[in-house]
Amino acid sequence: MQENNENNSKTSVIPLGQMPDKNALACPHCGLTDLTLDKETGHYTCNACQYEFKPVKEKFKQIPNINNDRQVDTSNLITLKCAYCHTEVTIDKKYLGQIKCHWCRCTLDANNVVQTTTPPRALLPFTVTREEAKIEIDKYLKDRKIFALTDFKERLNISNVMCTYLPYVLINTTTHASLTGQGEHTVKKNYDVNAGVTTYDADDYQVSREYDFYIDGLLIENEKETQNKKIIDPIKNMINNIKPFDVENSIPYKPDYLGGCTSQNRNINYNILKPIAELKTKNLTKFAANETLEEYDRGVAWTNMNLEVKGEDWKIVYLPVWLYGYKLKNKDTFYYIAVNGRNKNTTGNIPIDIKKLITISLIAELLGILLMLFFPDFDLKFFFLLLGPLCFYFIKQRYNKLFNITTEEDEEIKPKTYIYNLIQEDKVMQRKSGLKTTHMVGANNTDPIGTDTEVIRTERDRTGESNKEFTRQK
Image 1 (cartoon, one colour):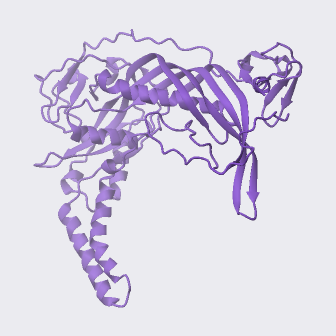
Image 2 (cartoon, rainbow, N blue to C red; image 1 turned 30 degrees about the vertical axis):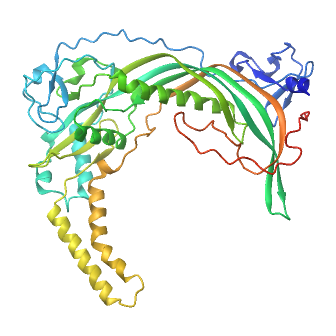
Image 3 (cartoon, rainbow, N blue to C red; image 1 turned 180 degrees about the horizontal axis):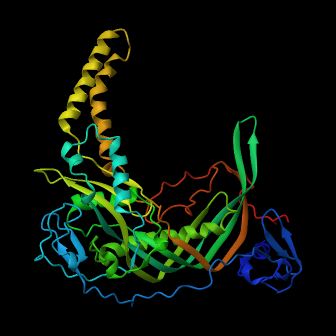
């Protein structure tokens, strides 16, 4: 039986891109071209040595050079630390004294100079004008003017709509993956009419995958190293809510592009960002194997995973945003409306006239009380008392959209990924019968690394054939 298992081993090392046509396909084991195709599985069987294999399409053959040596002359720029919100704002020196902090709108002090160490590598230019951004902000505010603070509306003029570049870290990485485990493929579904139970028969495979993987443009959003959390929390949600940005159209950064815009200084803190980047990279590398596991409909349980980062290129890219900022008087609270400088997507949080909101909520509560008295026999009459609180909650949620929508794992900006140098081996081990679950017990090929997942309950009541080895029917 062991010999039979070895004959059912399938190793794919032949990239389809190197084959002029199907007739050129040769057995990787003996080199002969006398092959039989199983149309259901896509596997070829060599009629000479009975070797079974599946050709693999090679998606990527050359890796871009990773280069961090590009030098940028930033002598015409100056970075000032805002005395109020501690944001490090970079501007062109010739605009010194004319530009305020884009977050708190406080005047930047020329004496609070900060030494920058990591200039951006790329910049995504504005394609939306200030006038167009003002129109989008007015549209966003139109349906929210009733409860908006009067001072917030009065200060909203085109001169207070600022162009700013917000920094994001993008990483290109090359990794190597070596994965081994078991996979299951359903061969039969059985339904017992008398017992009303469905069971499954499945082929159990020994599975291995080895490949190199390239990630182009992995986005890292973490901002933990920034001092003012009240500023950074809205930044993160803001960018997520006005995505996507067409980062692939970024251009090499030149200080001249900054012009009269502000930009937020961002030094790469590797101690904080590297573990985050490594986890995301390894998850993407692991999930890439799923492209080669389509036949394992019950899943794959990897028992040994070696995911190694071989090279990485870190770069900061500036994303364009039109921003109207407002600080609540006598309070350390900030409000913003932001417009994507590429596609006009708009989001924001708007200060509420709390007196007006409370008044409307009280009116709603009084209406609820009247309804409760008017319908005394209504079983759920006490729910009318919730009209006031519900009115207050939903209006406040609508105006504070920026803070209430968080998409930390948003994948709007998806990296481009490529598998190459793929070697895969699939060996039939046994047929399992009477399986009661729809998926393989312990399957983890879709589970993120670093996340504890609940293990599916152990298979029970298997039939006597579940562990029998068999000769696969061709």
